[in-house]
Amino acid sequence: MKKYVSFLLILGVIVGVHFVVVKMFFSGNKATAVKPVEEKKAEVVPERKWKYKQPSSNPLFGRYFSYKNTINGEIKGIPETKEAKSGILVNMNTREVLWAKNPRDGVPIASMTKMMTLLLIFEAMEQRPDLSFETPVHVTAAAQKIGGSQVYLDPKETFPLGELLKAMAIKSANDAAYLTAEFVSGKDVDGFVAQMDARAKKLHMPNTKYANPHGLSNASGENSISSAEGMAILSERLMEYPQILKWTSTIHDDFRPKGSKGWQLLTNTNYRILQACPGTDGMKTGYISQSGFCVTVSCLRGGTRIVAVLTGFATPKSRNSCAQKLLDWGYKRSASMHVQQETAVAKEMSKINQ
Image 1 (cartoon, rainbow, N blue to C red):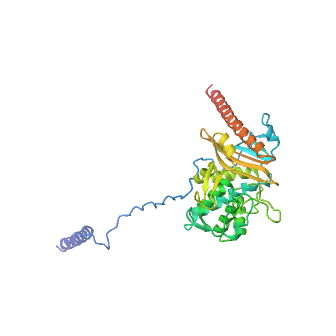
Image 2 (cartoon, rainbow, N blue to C red; image 1 turned 180 degrees about the vertical axis):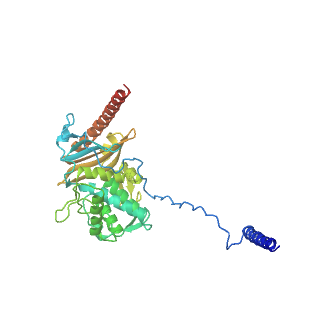
Image 3 (tube, rainbow, N blue to C red; image 1 turned 90 degrees about the vertical axis):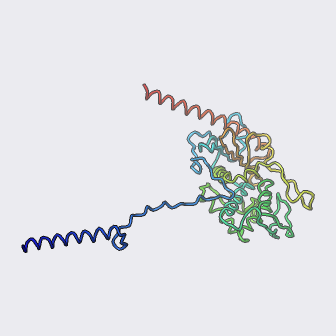
């Protein structure tokens, strides 16, 4: 009898415990119920909105140039290449150097200096909310004193930053180049020049050292120095900014309102090549006695971008002629190289399939 009672008591305890557990589970007791693991949502990183920049879609953008199949020195059929002190012709799509002459030698680059000035200012506009094309810039006495090619800035005047950049890109205005560098740097022009050197180093521009933001010789006779390869590298960065190409491909534009005092019709210093050579849309000319006539030319034909850089010419006519002939030659050579590569691949595939 006692065993029977004990059995019933134990059975009752077991049933009671199960009843309590089941009740707690279904009652949603927060102390004992196990919460389901929440699936962590992936962090959404907002896409950066560029104000002025359109990053290159070329997967080879920024890669080193290849000199594997380069023609060096004088080109038969283009006698002007003999006159060039240095130069380079690059298919930017493939990074292949089609032609070169002393491409890494450091030489005076004159107003091609402004290419780096433009790059730093456009990069500053991307990073600083206080800078835009509309930002007012008051002319300083220091900027007014800069000679050479200029738009004759007066300390009584104030211009939108974009107008000054336009004058620099189209007419190669030295006073506008100095003023914009002075403004963006908080009047620390030496600091701005140091930034130019630092950016050139980061871009791996061979033998590059800047003397000022405009390209004239300093009072001490110091010049901005770079290489043909360096200028080609720099031009690719500038082409990320559509407005720069728009300006460098513009033949004429107004500076100051038409009919007002001081109005100028800006004429592109590269207008002869722009008019005569199909597909050209920039980039920058230069001349001082130490550099000779030099140029960086960008050209787009049939989706292929080729850049030519030339320095050391005695006349602008021979420089322009060389640039135009080189570009025509370069597109033919690029097409020929493409055919040769396709033929070589076809032969290899044929061997494999045999």
